[in-house]
Length: 202
DNA sequence: CACTGGATCGACT
DNA sequence: GTCGATCCAGTGG
Image (cartoon, rainbow, N blue to C red):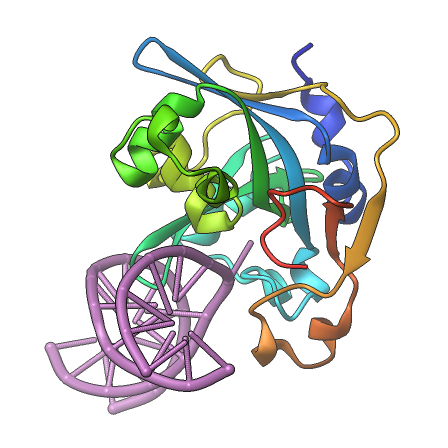
């Protein structure tokens, strides 16, 4: 079942936890790609020093974060990689959830071609988690680029479905890669599914 | 306009 | 474990 707008209209911490175990669906070129969300980070916006929208900062890049919950915010990091965020809360309350790790459910062959330019059947077993166990990796595997910035997740191209979220053991830990953000870097705003192979970093 | 640094990854030791 | 790649967004002049 596709999740509707009201699901996203909550703060990023609650949305982040609720997203674990859900299925992300992306339809491209007659291909249907489905992945299970296993690792996320919450960015709480105006009061969060680690957030692009700290103090309500609005720029051409961050504009999508100010849309109502249930849109995509995609940005470029380190000049090379795209990161996918799910916008949370209400319009003009710029909170979001960064997707850091997903588990392939459908279309793993396309993901393997996108990442390593070779079919899934030729991947060594040890390489399989490497398909999607990181924010830059999963966007590459799915083929998500900044063209999808601002995409409405209640549409038919990119959306999230209820999935396999029963009996999930959630681990809370510090967010990654935000050393500049003073006390905010200590907050336990990263959530992942315990023992899942597609978590980027334990 | 010029400069600075990043919500990462992969190659290498 | 360390380190370089690579390019855009943000800032200040």
